[in-house]
Structures are given as structure tokens and as C-alpha cells.
Length: 540
Image (cartoon, rainbow, N blue to C red; front, side, top):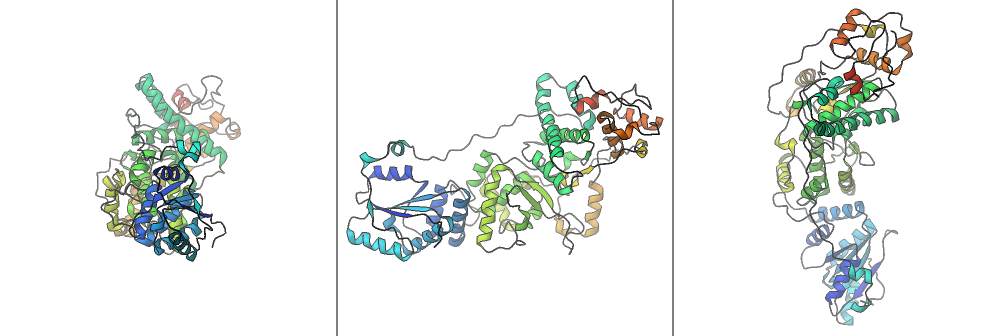
């Protein structure tokens, strides 16, 4: 027996007083009324007491006995339940008693059994049954009379499972697409004070989050760290406009730190966190968990909800893809040309929302109890032909299923550049033409594409916004406002061609000269620079 297992207490209540029953419901962490039936039914009653399911599931097959007791073990460990009260314990069968003993060993809970036996031989038989399964409670005690109940226990109301209020997110005004260097200024010119204030709050959240992240982490940033930052920034975004505004703010924050964050141009047609994903709120978690009690299947539905990625990618996620703290999820890159080869490409990184982390911890514990190794799939028995049934039982809209998109997720296609300021940075590369909008295509199965088709898909989708500054221009601009010494020591002045290109993109002010560049007011406003006391520019 596990040394951390809690004590077992047997309380005889021959009168079956209703007041004592209410005291048991108020005193225990969770209380279950034993009714005749199978072992699986008792486990489902415990899950319902844990508020993990409302037994609404009607399409997906019910969990078998072994799996449902593993689910009870995982949820009690994750939710840190330390006491279980069982009413009508005299109705327990040997198989149920054995399951309770295993549950106590694996979770360390203390058991409080209320037996309504009227004779001493019946109490001795119950004692013998408990002792045969390692649940030795010692001499039985008698339940306290109703007038001796503790005042705090008698006054405690019974637990009720109420639905959280439905999610209501404020809408953001729609703006035409433009470069992040003038996005904030255009919003201030076009919107009234209230609309701009709501939009600017999202913009500044992305800007300050980028500055904080870059100040804490080493540079240059690895690709998976960039993906994790972008996913964490947008996984709580309720809509596409919120995601786009946060991303514009993050791009400005990167530029203020001397980096250039390039995002795909066609974000309105892309997939991924914040675009085809939705936040895991209290209401969303309550609605989804009403019909799905299986920890692994619940984690799979939540992963589809907040990642917004292709189900084929999530189905191949190994146990090793989930980190120890359940904050990061690495999903195989099924769109990469080398997917499936011996040299597997790095996975796509997603941020797990705080409300979903206990669910993922329970899912990992469930797979570990089943003997799964690191390379085994995390979301077992959750995709394929079972996915439609799980989605119906969840009864919550999942955009990744209703509106699937074509190609890899947007945050996986984003790139972070850290060029050095040099005379080569003063050249003016030719402007690229904006690609035409891609027509809607039916989402294919990634496994049906050959490596050549995947490579062609990546070449077509990995196109940065042509209105954004180039990496060389971004380094030059960051060096100006930061007073970079390389700019002061530069022997070659800014060429007239480069000055014309920077001025045309509204990156430099029209009064700039080749030797005295001045940041454009729209760019200064985008970077949230102070209105006064800002270094206007230094000689090149």
C-alpha cells in the first residue's frame, strides 16, 4: 500500500438520518451516493461529483470500466482532491471495494464511508470486506447526532454546478490593411476617441509584451521561441481583428528593440492561434466538459479550439511534445517537405492557455497510467472517425472544424530578423508587388501531398508583407532612434535613392537629408515614443 494513502473511516448510521447525510455532503471534499450498478457507473458518479461531466454525451461511445477509473484517478490528482465521502457504503460490492482501494493507493485520498447497517453482524461483514481489500478502518464509530454538528458544516450549502456567464467580447472597428509603421497613426486619424481607445489598448498590449519578452530572453530568438511568444500573445484573442491589432503592436515592439518581425501577408486567409482559434474561457471549458469526461479527448478538443490548426497535425502529437508544466505544446509540422522522413523537422510550438493546463496534465497522467512511452501519441482515440462524435458531444463551435484553412499556421511562417547596421543597409532594394489574393481552396489532407507539393505550398505562402520595411531598413531606423554608434561612425552618407525609398514608405520625415535623417511622425507614434525629448536623428 502506498504510504501517502489517507486514513479510512467507517461511520455506522443505522437510522439513515437525512441531517447526517447533509453533514456528509458538507464535510467531505466530494461525496457520492452509492447506488446499485456496475463499477463504471460508480466511477461516472464520482466524475459527476468532481463537476467534470454532466452526462450529456450521446454520440461518442462511453468509457469502459478501466478507462473511466483511470480518468477518476487523473482528475482527483490534478484537482488535488484529498477526501472522498461515500454514502450507503453497505451496498458496496467486492469489485467496487477493490476499485476504491486502488483509487486510494494512486491518489492518497482519505475515505469516509457512511454505512446504514442496523446489526452488529452486518457491520462485521462490512469490516471483513474492507479489510480483505486493504481498507482497514479499525473499530466502527457512530455518526454524531444532528444537534452536535459543527456550525460551519451545518451552515455550508450544498455544492451546485452553475454555468458561467456566456462570453461577450467587444468588437473592434475594421481597418484597411497597412504596414505596422503607420497602423496606429492611421487608426487615430480614422476612428473616433472611443473606438481608437479600444483598439489602442490591444495595440499597446502587443507592443509592451514584445518589449518585455525581448528584454528577458537571449537574442537572436530561436524560431520555436518566436512561435511560442506569438501563440501566447494571440491565444486569448477573441477574433481576427484583435489578433491583427496585437500583431501590429508586437511588430512595433520588435522594431523598437532593433529587430524585424515579419508576418505573412495574407493573414485574413491564414489559420492558427487567434485566427481560426478561440480563447479557452470559463464558459468554453464548462460547455465542452459537459459532454466529454475522457481527459485525453477533452484535451484534444481544447487543443483544436485554441490552436486552430489542422486535426491531422494534432493527431500525430507525441507525449514528448507536452512540456513538464503543461504550458507549451509542440505539434509535428505536417506541411513540411521532410515530414515523415528519418530527419523529422522541428515541431510547431503552441502556448497552452492557463484554463486548459489542468486538462492537459490530466491527459498526460491518463496516458502514463496506461503505460504510454514518450513517442506514443498524446491524443489517443480522439481523431479520425471519432472526431465528429466528440465535436457533437462538446456542443461548442470550433472554427478549425467548421472553417478549415489551407497550409501551415501563420505564426509558424513568421520570421524574426536581426540585421547589423552597415553601409550595405543604406541600399534601397526594389519594392515587391503585392501578391494577388489567393482564391479559396478546399483544405486537403496534408498526408495526401507529396514533398514537392508541400515545398511549393510553403514557397507560395511564406511571403512577407511588402509594405513593411526590409531588414536592412529596420536596422537603420532602430539605430537612428537608439543612437547606435555604428550610425555615427558610418563613413558613407545615406544615398539619395535610399532616402527616397525610406521617405516614400513614410519611415523618414520629408525634411530628412542624407546626413540628418528624421523619423516620420507616424513611425514615432507607432513605436510609442514620447512626444517630446526624442532624438530627432543623428548625422549618418
